Image 1 (tube, rainbow, N blue to C red):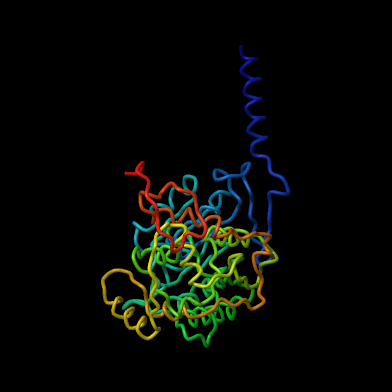
Image 2 (cartoon, rainbow, N blue to C red; image 1 turned 30 degrees about the vertical axis):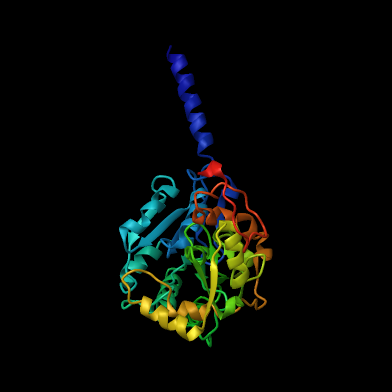
Length: 373
């Protein structure tokens, strides 16, 4: 009896010893700081890849997709937030104790430092599509980016990945784009090896791009005659690219321009939306001055609307500048024509909700079947 218990005890110790065994491949040493990153487990959300990551702007559109990918590998993720309700959905993306919420305020430097001091990687996804009485574009895109970069440098953060925007230049007529460019320059002056990401308009389930274009049931508004050229990109592709940048040595200090595979004019996008939703929508072209005036008036409303600066951005063509792209990350961007139905089906009427996508139906009169009535 006693011998049997001893054998069982030895077997248990052997199993525990094997479970706790570590290999040289489990140890990664940061080239910048010499800080060790130790992997544990067999992989997956219940394991640990050794990373402690802070994602500022995680409660926005892109943030939830990025955190989902990071949490799958067992990273410890610090989730800075201002409103508790905005981050609740993020807590279930990682295993117990892996998602760590921390309340911050952009004008409280101590709260920002507390969210960074234990991290080896910082993603800055902070951005505003419109200005408010509390925060201007410069406050969020320039000043806040500079503070985060200074704190990251102070605590020897290995990787700093800065979210910018396609067409960001200091002399842009759009304040959004010019301040994004100023933020890039400020971050690079503090952390020269920071990675900058410039995505085009992103679309997905909760976007403000396709949804806004499809929102009008009776009339589609065209700015600049619908001739502005854009290359919209799937938000999932951008999140995958930023996830790869976590451990990609070929991304350090580089700038990436992430755009979709196909270039469209706004007129072509509106036609695509008509075909996908099976709705006959009329077109009206609004001159830029009138559209800007209407947008400024709408900004006085207590809820989020189209901003005047967004009208300015709708006049700017997407232009690649020779920076790295999805190709350098071995990622094939998703086609809007293939996946668009997933995001636009909800704008169909009940008569066409389950019908397959049909090409060449724009402007044609719909026929109704009695089986639908």
